[in-house]
Image (tube, rainbow, N blue to C red; front, side):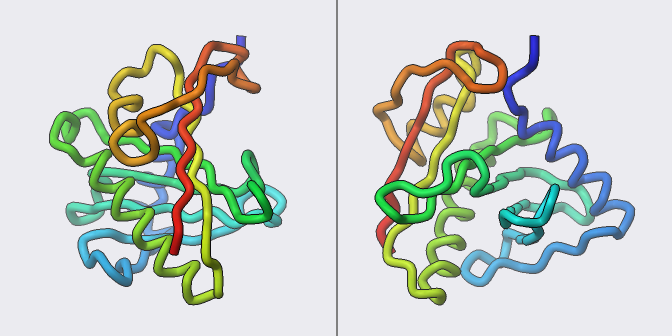
Length: 164
């Protein structure tokens, strides 16, 4: 059976590219402890924004936003968020901090382009309690139950309207 999209896999790939020097994230505009890398994966049509905290060239927290899965809500952009933290950095509040900081950076960036509202969506496996706790604090404390389109497993959908 296919697995639900796992941001940890993307984090490991991002980490490898940072260490190899193939990508060089830039410092955040608001939070100087966060780094951002923008690209267009796959066919290049939809932008992806990746936010990380680093110790040297080691990723210590990771959040990625993409438009591909949720598109628009009420005409406003919706970005799917995924976040991950390497094992040795877990249980330190890093996932919550990277998600919060990344949303603030996105808010700042989208305001420069005239946006007034955007949405953030997280789809989390029903068994992933740690990610649920982060989503409840950062995105919404009222998730809706669903079946994930990819894995066909029970999941929770967290949705937040961010006004700029």
